[in-house]
Length: 337
Image 1 (cartoon, rainbow, N blue to C red):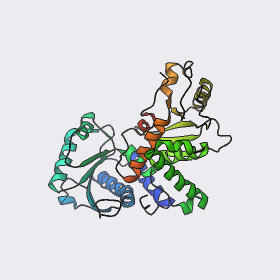
Image 2: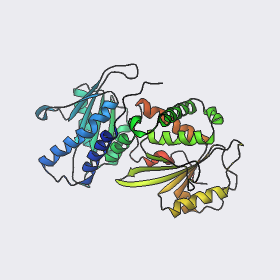
Image 3: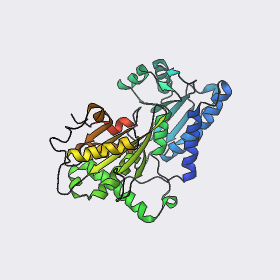
Image 4: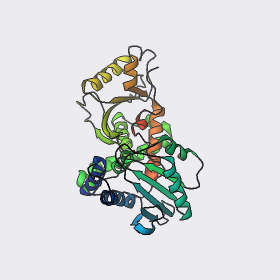
């Protein structure tokens, strides 16, 4: 397994999230002074994030930045290739969308300066045309990040286990990471996990992908195994995940689905994901309305394997979260049809 980087202390992660919150709030005002303050806040958030990925960050001179606000370099190691990263930050009034020409200009500036990877970070949103540029065959790696994506990036960072609890907790997290890697490599590994092992593994996977995660107690869990949180278009959203991993290989029936849906509705959450490693009975979805099927999605062992593979990519640094992190939750699932 790749060697772990040094973990953050809780106060360091809190500082990152506080800087993102200030950028998100829109209370910096407008004009050059606001832009400078926004850049300073961005540096507070970006430097520790990139440091965790092995980069050293410097700010470019304002009079000759070549269109890039920050440069970051990473030396070659056993886990990473040497890489030069350029970051541009655009601070706009709320409602302003960043268009395709800004992305093309950034790509041009990066090519002139022989940059390997470039990130355009904004405090508003990108137009669809701007995002479509990324679907082309580009000569360098380009990432478009808004504040939701930056928040998800920060949420994926580990906090120093010394401050989180006992050595047992640290061991369980390490084991869950290894389980996720094994499942990604060979789906048959699922057959050898106990139900609580799989719940811990799913919780670890979603945390590694950028969600805030609460693993409920094994008893009196209130009808959900994992509680997930993420920002969607600047709004905090929350989802429940229920996992059925029966060693009897039994399939899930409609009663269990209805009970889970009632929990989501009763507690006023944004949606839910039901995961059953051995699938569902033929009539499991008959009692669900179309509205139910929009709010509650279903996955089987293939969805669990896909999540673990995405998690492995995220830990290796070759995956970036989508514009809407909740898409990770529902991608590759069905609505009971």
